[in-house]
Amino acid sequence: MLVAGFTGRMEETYQSILDGPREAVDLVIGLVGGMVLFLGLMNVARAGGLLAWLARTLHPLMRRLFPDVPADHPAMSAMILNLASNILGLGNAATPFGLKAMVELRKLNARPGVASDSMALFLAINTSSVTLMPPLGTMLVREAAGSSDPLGFWVPTLIATTCSTVTAVVACLLLRRLWRARGWDGHAGVEETEAEEPALSAAHATIPEGPAEPMSRARRLLVSGIALALLAALVLEVARSAGAPDGSLRNVLRDWLLPLLVAFFLLVGLAGRVKVYEAAVAGGREGLEVALRIVPFLVVILGAVAMFRASGALDLLIGILDPVTRPLGMPGEALPMALLRPLSGSGAFGVMSEILKTHGPDSFIGMLVSAFQGSTETTFYVLAIYFGAARVRAGRYTLAACLAADVAGISAATAATHLFFG
Image (tube, rainbow, N blue to C red; front, side, top):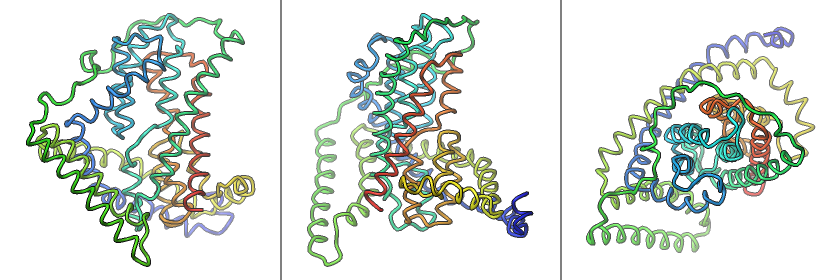
């Protein structure tokens, strides 16, 4: 308001107070259909055994990363299911497993109130946002903003999240040695009275076995036949595009990627003997709840950002920071997104939406902030709820490792976006 008053832009600021919240509601309405559909498809794949398969695949790696956690302890199962859910983009399913893991790790901790090495590493990996599936919300916002390639940011995001996860693990291991070498572990925690644990029993934190019955020969032939037919069609499309003057492999992948992903989810459900329609509807209800849940956050943040931009305050901030960040490859226009991402997931989502609307979803800045959204997690939020579940007061080196992963993720997203779209 002060900036608007001194710059003579109060009329624009007044209009932004009316336009920002309305645009936020329009955005959510545009997201509802996609959220319902894709969360429904993810539920089909989860019921078909995809989560169980990934959890079993991660088990050997997790035993190496967490040697002080017994392989048959509930903490190990809960951590595996948490990370498997994150990899598949099932954030809502990941949180209960993560809370259960922290509660179980607390039982193994000899120093109550102080984060153990396992707790620190587990949280650092969580905040690095390792994921293989396309970030659904970002894809839908880009599509609503008129992008010709809503999934174009996926590869830079994969590169960024891989770099942030590797950095999180390495930073934890190095900081652990430094912490011990400097003797900074001399203080002890204070035991507190037991509080009610998150609503997830140890029985639910065991690694699922997948579908109860194996596929019959006829079902196996059907699934294999459909998969091979899709592969043959893709090869034919690539061959056709190679001979066309304007054809390119990138255009083929852009057109085929999302349909192949949908087909993959459905084939997993078919292979797992899932009632596909019923499972998709059940998952779709969760998508509707998620869309409704983010309405207040987006209304507030988009209203605030619209006022911040209309008043001239954002231009003033960019003018100050751009000479510092642009030589490093990051335009000042993208900096608010990079700074807000570790603090607020909904806030960053709203800022990204506003930037896509202003600069265009397929512009370099639009691609960059889209990659930012999937490169890291909301670090401080994750630390708050997970440490709260385990009643940890001294996080030791956890925050430093998480912030190192955030910096690595943002830096890798910037470099990858330059590589593909610069």
